[in-house]
Length: 152
Image (cartoon, rainbow, N blue to C red; front, side):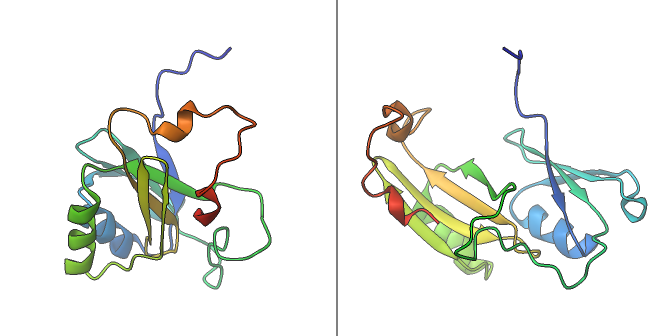
């Protein structure tokens, strides 16, 4: 087994530097450094929770959109990041106040989730559940999971 200690960072390719920095700052991420965005190096941002993003760019295809969660065909690749939040109603109020569209939602066992998109349509799932782990992680791997079919 590989001795993984934590997720170190999440890399997201973006098109427009300032638009993405502003979006993630709105979510609470703080700018750390621009290691050379125009040369393909990351803009590093960190949330007070410890989540670190590397915003990579610039994207070389201006017409390409992230479609992994939007089409019936299931393509390989990273589809989204999921962040645990303390209050779904508070998050929904924050998103509404800041004109960030909720693009999906689902409930499963003790977890409620909403989905949003960053400016490049990368999916961010916001999860609320009691304790450290949702009840879905306590399921047997072969168990039917009624209610989960709502998950995009």
